[in-house]
Image 1 (cartoon, helix red, strand yellow):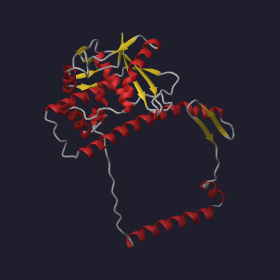
Image 2 (cartoon, helix red, strand yellow):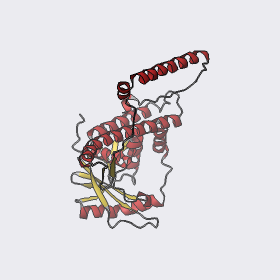
Image 3 (cartoon, helix red, strand yellow):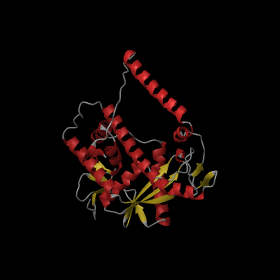
Image 4 (cartoon, helix red, strand yellow):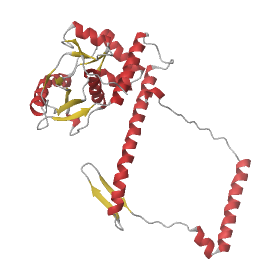
Length: 318
């Protein structure tokens, strides 16, 4: 079991505006990088490392600039509406794993704050993107908090908010996910210290594709498990309310129909009981057809070539 941290270090008072902060970020792993490190392949790792060594080539766009401009507003809204908090620019460090860093958008007494201005394509979604979830788990690992406040708004194509007011949800500490993120960050740090060697001579783009496959497979497996768990509740209810025609009902985000259909099928037992002679003839014919097919396959065979590719997740990447 992961030991929860109880305090954090302030590595730099200004995460991005001071040489101390920039140097620490370049040398360590920030919470915003944890998702890409944990889920990405060698190509993603090289891109992160190149940004650290050479400085990021991304200087922002209109959407990211609007997002930064809106951060103060969203923090103030959260402070007034949800829980007392204030904006933050300090770079925080994990008290034990010195290379693990985080810069929360805001800090409360016992929680951090992440604010986002999503573009118009976000629509009415209320989920937390995986990369933001991991970023907040990383923040909790650094700060020792049990919860993190996620606040968002949606900006229209004209750059103005589309919601009546921002939305929020609490994200709670996930020890299992934190352990995974920190382990992957430590492996990234060790790979960097070893000179960033190639992985089994596999091209970076192939390694990235394999990482994408593993991530998709893990999400699919988790989704299938969630579907099965939900069906164990839905199906008994549908069976309970069903009549001769079936059942249907609608919920907030999904609806179901249970259809009853009847199709005829051969009852061999009834046939054998009612007409034993014709049924015996049928069985004899079926056996002779099978024998003829087997003999023909020997005389008139051809080679059929097929390929099958299997991909398996790396054991320690689960």
